Image: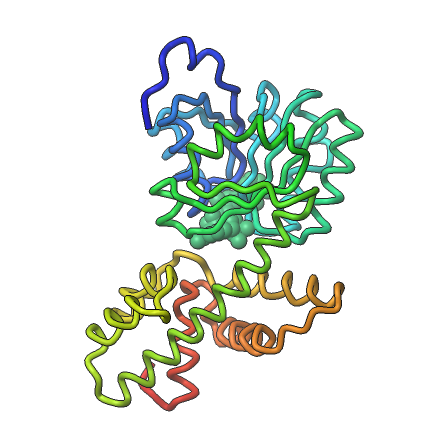
Length: 304
Ligand code: NAD
């Protein structure tokens, strides 16, 4: 990305970033690299220090972070956290200025996004839901897929900023549509990881060279971004997150509920949701979702 000139830097909106976790930290840093003025707030002091070291400003609260912002971006775990930072006297809606644009990039229920947009409208704050796919690596490399719900004019205003974070950026429809597409994304990713995990256990038990097998599989119709990105996790049994099983469990709940509400059957998704839930119940919720391999190993009597 080209370095902005002094005049373009002056025109860039001031950003408040709430939620500097695995995804939020590198994403906020990419905005800083693109020339944006970023003030952030998150619960961990080390993440605030990291933001400051990258050239951002650390705030002491949500209210302080959002007060002067043109655009507020949130990247927190789930609907309860979005509601906690949006509503209430110390929240975004009470403290951001009227006319500000609130972009929630967390993966939450579509209904939470619809409700947030309605409540924000009463305060003169515009909202986009803009969840992402691509994982930690996609966040670091600024190649995320960004699925957006909301008004077209707000989407077009946010597009330059999205371009500093991702590569595939699509307005999917009205408020909540981005979250619905993200729910479908999480269904596809979980089923794909599960299929890869089953293939890994099958190949190993069959005595086939796993590296060779994964290489050739990834060149054919069985190839996928999941197989590319998670290959080393499978080979090394390295389940450091990445994307935590706890978060994928949340997402499988979102897609299962949303599908039921529109009368869509997800038979394979329902089974994989149970496997994710089982892994979590066995204490593996903090591991990367590639740890679905552990569940298959347990079922197959393989060593874990
Ligand atoms: P994370 O747990 O690493 O980070 C969440 C951050 O939110 C933490 O830094 C925490 O301090 C902050 N937070 C929580 N409550 C807060 C509050 N009240 N005020 C201020 N900050 C608060 O999670 P993550 O992996 O970065 O995921 C964030 C969102 O992105 C989730 O919705 C997740 O489903 C989604 N997502 C994650 C990935 C991934 O690969 N990790 C990929 C795509 C989407």
